[in-house]
Image (cartoon, rainbow, N blue to C red; front, side, top):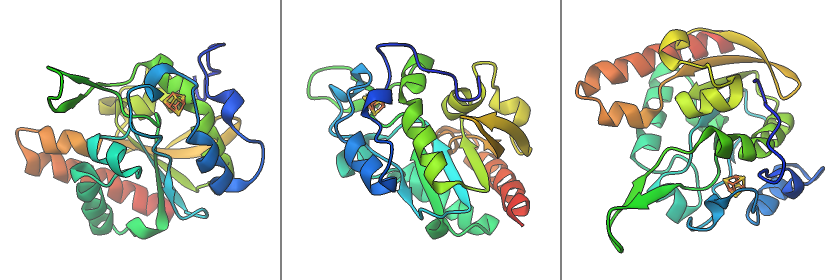
Length: 215
Ligand code: SF4
């Protein structure tokens, strides 16, 4: 798919301003009604970081903490990612981090009970794609690190399988631009793994490939 066109009537496209850089995009995204996910979430969680970052990290969607704070990767998975990035030789402070989907999708077992993460559908990720396309057009990163299956499918199509391509440097046309990408797992999968140490080592090894690709 590589930047597949969103379906009519289910897209962020009309909400995306043509100019104004990241501040204008962030302001406009706060009012996005491009798909139903804005209804239950607290707020839009737009990307954050260096507007001239050499590397852009793309995750799935905001988690519970991110939804409350309005910032991406501030919860436990974000802390683990920062540690792995630093260990791989990529300064987390010089990266731009964002998600394929900008609103938190969740379910509750019972009213007032803890919110449980629910994976967004490809339709929702595609609807949200115009925000990711706009971020890529402004930041123009040298490399995209794809964190997990949802981000991979949003950027590279529904046939994307993280296990097949993780830790490799891909070159693909994404939203009309030639991009280099290194896929890996989402850091939350490391936190859920039975063998956390092995899962962390796998993430670190993939991020080292990204660090080498950046030179
Ligand atoms: S998930 Fe994306 S497309 Fe859907 S309302 Fe939120 S910002 Fe808009």
